[in-house]
Length: 287
Image (cartoon, rainbow, N blue to C red):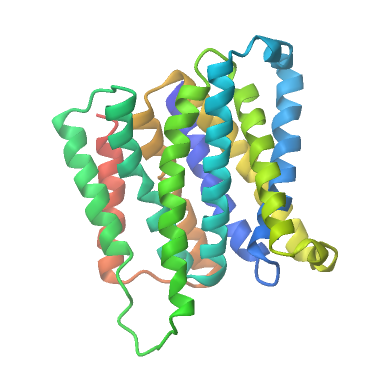
């Protein structure tokens, strides 16, 4: 059953990227992230109260609190990097880099969580790594972009690194507690971090000037994120992190399909081969 939750996480994560890209055309990415987090927080705590898991909050051990908070901080950092990269970069290049966190997550799962990895999964990791490399290669184009516009790649890699830490810390943090409650606690940490970033960058006053259409899209992306999270951490709680994480990364398929329909972004032949390798590697992880 946990595989079903992992697939659900992938689908809603893919939708999140498209909605977020549409919602940050004129809105500062940090502000958009903070607003989305409010939606996710409301969404996650509603689930906690509906399931009745809020009654167990006093039973959470100190160690679990520590890892949930660390996971929340890693998530916040990943989000801030990811959505800034989306705002200034090509979605078909940002998303593959973000999904490269799969490789690091698997390595950390083996080292820290002592999860076993077979020869097939080693091959799968190689396929995912090579596929990601092919997808992020520069377009053969006459366009000249300045150095500032190329900074998206640094934010994209930052997103991937923090996302891999999120997966491992989240796996440890939800051991022994209900997954929805763990998600809700982590989201609160992300919320605080996101709004501190907005305040520090002096963007607080721009909230009122956000266009209604973009505000709607940002809120919808928050709902999609909340749904993806709930599925993801339920899958992490019941299944293997080295399998759940790759399935979640299949959201790249959803994102690329919608990026073609919505933004008319097309893949080069090299990027197409890379996508096939990533999918093949991900599916191989299930063997």
